[in-house]
Image 1 (cartoon, each protein chain N blue to C red):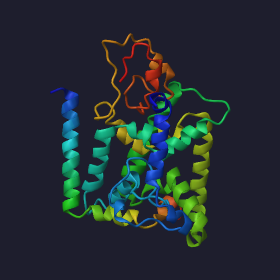
Image 2 (tube, rainbow over the protein chains, first blue to last red):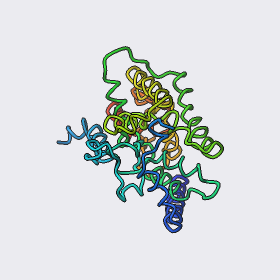
Image 3 (cartoon, rainbow over the protein chains, first blue to last red):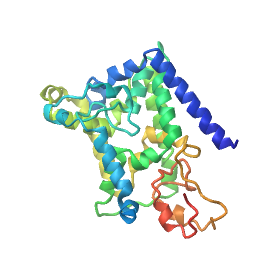
Image 4 (cartoon, helix red, strand yellow):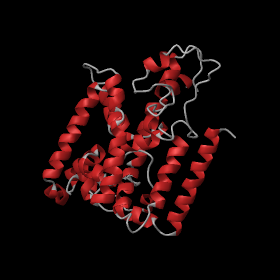
Length: 46
Length: 267
C-alpha cells in the first residue's frame, strides 16, 4: 500500500470514528443548536 | 453536451451548490433563519449559518463554537466532519463548492487592472494558515470568542448581517460598531477580488487552509502523470493560484490547467 493510500484511509477512519463518537455522545446537538439560532458574532452584533 | 460541460460545468456546479446551501427561500422573505434538522450537519464550503437561506451549518463557525467550549468537551463531531470532507474532497471544495469562491470569481470578471501572482502573493498565501491557527483555533480556546467569525468572515457579514438585516428589523436595530468594522473588511475583500484572483481564498480563508492539508492525498485530487509530463511549466504559468505544482496545497482543483497541457498529463 502506498503512503498516500495509507494516509487517505487512515484519515478517513479517524474521521468516521470522531463523527461516531460525536453522534454517540450527542455532541452533534450543539452544532445544531448553534446553527439554528442567529449567530450574533457572525453577523457583526457581538 | 460534453463541450458545454467542459466549458461551464464548474460554474454550473458552483451556482447549484450555492443555491443548495441557501435554498430556504422563505427565510429571505420572512427575515428568519432555517431551524430544521439539516443544520445538524455542515456544508463543505464557507456559508454562514445565519444566512436566512442557509439549510446547513458552517464548518468554520461550528468549529470555533465547539472550541469555545472545548475546555469541557473535545469537539469530536465537527473535527470528524472537517476531516471527512477534507480527505474526500481536499480543495475541490474551494474550486467547485464554495459560494465565496464563486462570488470572487465573478468579481474578477469586472474589467480593470489585474494583479498577477508573484513571489509576494506566494508568501501572502501563508496568511491563511496564520488565520486558521490564530483566529479559528487559538482565539476561541483562550479568549472564548470565535475570532474569525466575529472580526473577519465576509460570508457572515454579507449573508448574515446584510441579508438578514434587510428583512429583520430587530437585527437591523442591533447592528453597531462591530458591524461597521466587518463591513470595512468586506469592502476590502470585495475590492481586492476585482483585481486579485480569489484574494480571500488565497490569503485569508482558514477553511481553504484546512482543506489544503489533504490536497495531495484526498480521494478527489489532481494527479500529474510523470511518464507523460515534459515539465514545460505551462500548467503552472496558466494557473492563477499560487501553485508550485499541480495538485499542491494551493491548487483548488479547478481543472483549468488541463486545457493547456499539450501532453494530456493531468487528470
